[in-house]
Image (cartoon, rainbow, N blue to C red; front, side, top):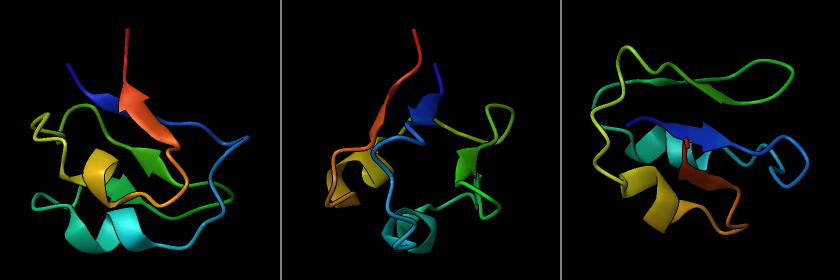
Length: 57
């Protein structure tokens, strides 16, 4: 199961992108996580200071 970044909470600080071991997080108008590349390690969840990242349901 991949993770998803909530665009309403994300402040685009880039912390998640810097800790992602697979490069699954991409910057754009809002940060997004590529579910095909995400390995569900949760590193981004722990790193996000805003709590904007959660597992996709």
